Length: 417
Ligand code: AMP
Ligand code: GLY
Image 1 (cartoon, protein in one colour):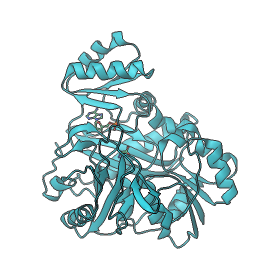
Image 2: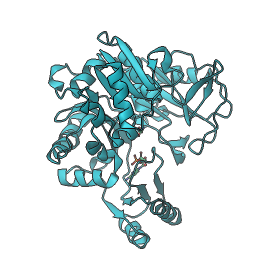
Image 3: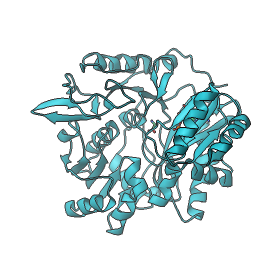
């Protein structure tokens, strides 16, 4: 198999590493890639936001499969453009990608399909904000309806902050979703989908806030670990039955069958698992830990999904033990990051690259999330030790990372209400 991976994050670096381990994969290409992916795949410069450029590249490389990492190309229709040229593609159509592209669309799908989720009110003009906040109550959850790289959500007890975020989103021309706050630990569950069937992967947990102890602003994700040994028995089959299967059926009924990776963001509340969001792609940084533990061929799995027939591959097999990833972010992230600084230690095995580039032969920072230090171990404590050893051997001026990734879970302190 010749495979083209679209994207430039640590998620794509992890996808390429896992694809390299699949004996059926002969050639790998990446667009646009980063400094770390160059040793695994041939780098192809292309504007990934433009569907025709992506499809043209796939055709010129004569690949057997295109795997699309980020949401922006998917929402723009990259999978449709690739499929229109008769090339198999792992990733949903633009219509199906609306499950991530519009939070109001996702809520509507869930409500029709009877999927447990928080109640939400869509606000389209400033006069509706106060009533929506009163209805949903404090802590206030205020979301940008559209794509915002994980930074469009504000969760706050401060009503003025909630109103200000809602006004800012409306001023930017987007609808606002005000939601009921869900209390409980979060779980990211990925499912590989072929349009009608969903094959769940290992549950993982992400750390969305910038600072230790879940403080500071929301980010794209500052670290992750898998598996989650504290989840109730039967969680994955329950989510398959109550969330994944009904959503796939409802999407197909709308003429927007979902093929690709369906990411269910769940909160395990005292009333059971409820969905806070769907993404239409692999999550970053959860992918780094989930794929670190995958012990069966990734290329064959993604190709079967792209061909609409997951029954032809066996269920994924997982390694024993745990994996942890710690994101190393640039100074000022999640604001406009400081870039262009030299990095040392980025060539260690287990350092997955995101915002990196090579300038004059030197690896430099080139984005907000710069590296993802990823390691496995016999248990969570061992995986944490190994991941933080990688972090300690990296140097990047002004960089930030959390010191408490997987700490509570390793100490047995995560509780489901
Ligand atoms: P989202 O982009 O929708 O995943 O939201 C980003 C983060 O905000 C989530 O990972 C949660 O930590 C938090 N969040 C979003 N919606 C809710 C909610 N209804 N209740 C509690 N926390 C939420
Ligand atoms: N880790 C959260 C996301 O990928 O959206």
